[in-house]
Amino acid sequence: MPGVPAPHDGRYAPSPTGPLHLGNLRTALLAWLFARRAGGRFVLRIDDLDQGRSRREHEAGQLADLAALGLDWDGPVPRQSARADRYAEGLAALEAQGLVYPCWCTRAELREAASAPHGALPEGAYPGTCLRLTAAQRAEREARGRPPALRVRADAAVVTVEDRLLGPSTQVVDDLVVRRADGTHAYNLAVVLDDHDQGVGEVVRGADLAETTGRQVWLARRLGLAVPAHAHVPLVLGPEGRRLAKRDGAVTLADRRALGERPEQVRGLLAASVGLCAPGATPAMDELVAAFDPARLPREPTVLRP
Ligand code: GLU
Image (cartoon, rainbow, N blue to C red; front, side, top):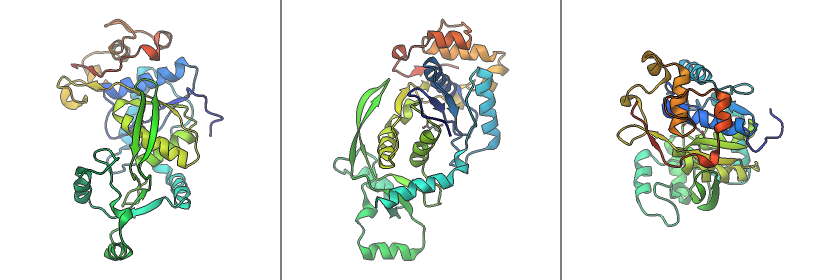
């Protein structure tokens, strides 16, 4: 366990479901720069809650790619899959506050519920169907024997999120899943406990996760944990304006190497895409640290034609 987190102790938390692509690598590089520029620690974590899609070989490949790019990190690299006891402890703390309830809704029911208007909650939010079951309805679902997911009751709490890049935003928290029907703890619960336990003071990650922040801030508060700062960095998009993916061409470090590019050239490409160096330059890591200024990062996604 680290000591007291400094505000700029940062992290990168890849899901080992495939090789990292240029978008992931750029997010990792930026997260590293945020932390190192401020003299903070930088830790990694393996987000392998989804055991069906996570592979050890991807995990090893991702760490090797980060190292090849020039990133270094502090301390061990925990796997979420080894932390179920800690997540159960967090869940128990929410249960002790009377906040947790079972949810038997099927995917189809969730889709249907999400498409109906429901007051203050955002589109796609869970409207609390299973919270309002009568005792008889609940008994009937229990008798069917299908295990429920567990949700936490948030009462449409309104959370103001401060983001270093995106500015302040107000998010309404729905009754989020904290444990899935298959017994796996949910991402939002895990990430809050992980970031706390790893001493993360600032969460830097891709802008696609900005909308999860309200839920995570709310959960951290319910669990009595210090809330980290947040900075959501712009995504890298492919030529069609969608999130960069395999179909877009040479998107992984291995693909780029196969084209004859060296890792420092890939790093230069990523750095140039956020204005940290001139196109074609190959700055060293310490030069990037010196050039890095979060306030001057672009806020808009970058389109790459790899
Ligand atoms: N594991 C997540 C991903 O690869 C990131 C989670 C996070 O940064 O909070 O998209």
